[in-house]
Image (cartoon, rainbow, N blue to C red; front, side, top):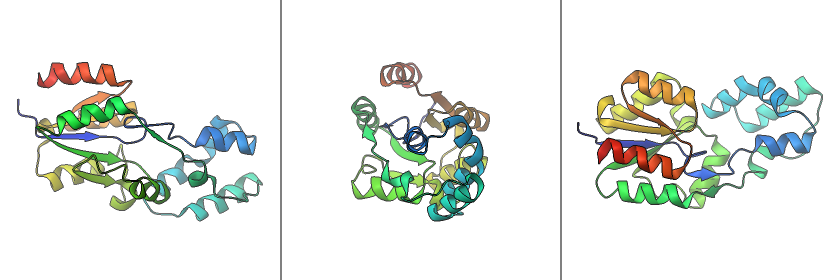
Length: 192
């Protein structure tokens, strides 16, 4: 077996404390479950770059009756790098091409880009720029085509089971991320 490419998710894999929804819900005094249910399709549109954050909040205010005074999606975004995952990526880059395949929005992309947090990767494939998001097959196909590799030559790591299942369905070696030590063990079993 010849592995040529590793695709890492960003939030929930390399980044910790990236999910702003719990804090938004605390500030708005709304349940996380209802917030996610009410906004699922609009979040997907944000990640595909098809709407802007202000459109998201206008629609939210219209549907919920809650007036939004500040933009919380970017205002509450305070992620941290998982140094153990970062070390795994640094080691992999000595022998492999390692890219980021991330579902993100423009504001979070800008925040991370300005702070140089994508520099660890050889390239970054961001959903809002690609206008397709995981778990859609097109998201993966665009990365594979751009990198000139086959699914069987690719390892994909993500923290959402639906994304991992989509990668597996395409024929990639796909791993559900839980923590750095488990990932390190899984990768050693795969590549030695």
